[in-house]
Image (cartoon, rainbow, N blue to C red; front, side):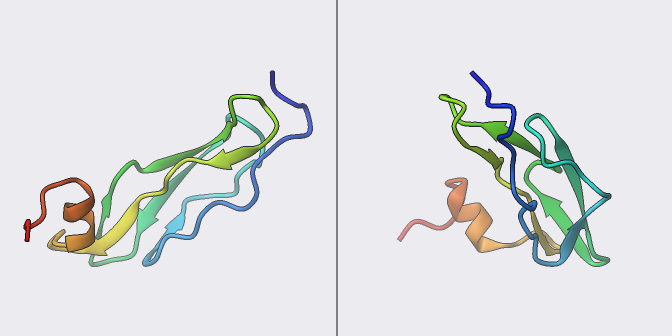
Amino acid sequence: MYLAFAGCGDVPEVVNGQHKANYSHEIGASVAYICQAGYILVGKETVVCEASTDGSTAAWTVPPKCVIGNGHDLSVCTLRGEGNKA
């Protein structure tokens, strides 16, 4: 059950990136990101405003990261299980 007034707040900020255009805060709305020159996008390009399972709240999905052009952001590798294991 979705509540008619429920929606998301502002889209998440992405360091060294920005969202492409104006956007809606309504459930189901999507927003795409681009990275500044010299950075590459890691993760999904688009976030979506999704309602909680009971419809009482809404939040944006996980935003991408913009990492320096070589893509060697160790925090991303570690989160994906590809980093060095101590």
